[in-house]
Image 1 (cartoon, rainbow, N blue to C red):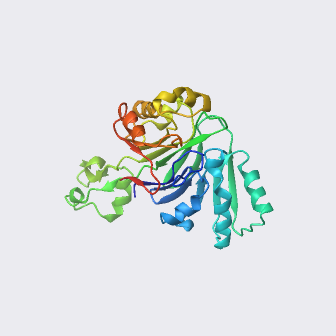
Image 2 (tube, rainbow, N blue to C red):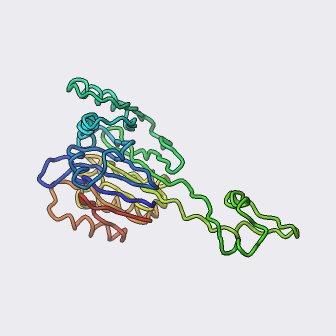
Image 3 (cartoon, helix red, strand yellow):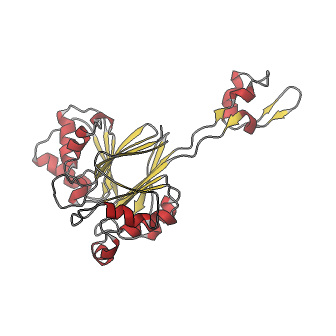
Length: 305
């Protein structure tokens, strides 16, 4: 249970030794998601022991190569491994065409069903929901159509306060479902036992917000408000805000400002420009505004229970 975010890649587009483009593996409330799929993602999955068979949903933020060039290779490998389960792929309009074309030309034959969910709205929308998790888009501002994603646990049911229940001999197992549903219990004497006495409130649903390539966009704050973990790109240090604006990326201090104003619990920075040798400068700058800041590193897992 809880949230675990494993960083598979966290660097910007320029190829370098020991630098890997964006990809993350998210486990939340016993659900498993792959977020972005830059070149080399499947190798990183093997290296950090992310089971291929766990992934049934892949979320692509935008169609720049450092965020999806690893997708077709991963899909082809799924075919080689005789995958049979349906796979759902979420991303900008055009992702279906470019992916199926590559698979067709390379004659990569996949027996499993691929369902593409193409996105085009500039407003936040619910794109996935089951009995445990919801996923909403976070509209971002980049050079091409881009979304982040907000993953949120469904609210859990109340737990029975068995120590208190045992104080009332009339209450038996047949009443448990009604109690968990929030109902009070009326005893034969006419006494009403409050539901709050018989139950333990559920823990707050956890959430993870993924904000990939984007310029500074305060409009996302209401969407990600109170998120437990926020990943926000910080391609540049604060002294290159001019370049961030030109390329539609963010700086350390801009990411930290978003985290502070959104009242998130923890900020993870990533997507560092290759011009920087000392990444600790990113953390130092961001912590001037938002103390609980960490740096994304390949293989590092961030957890919250």
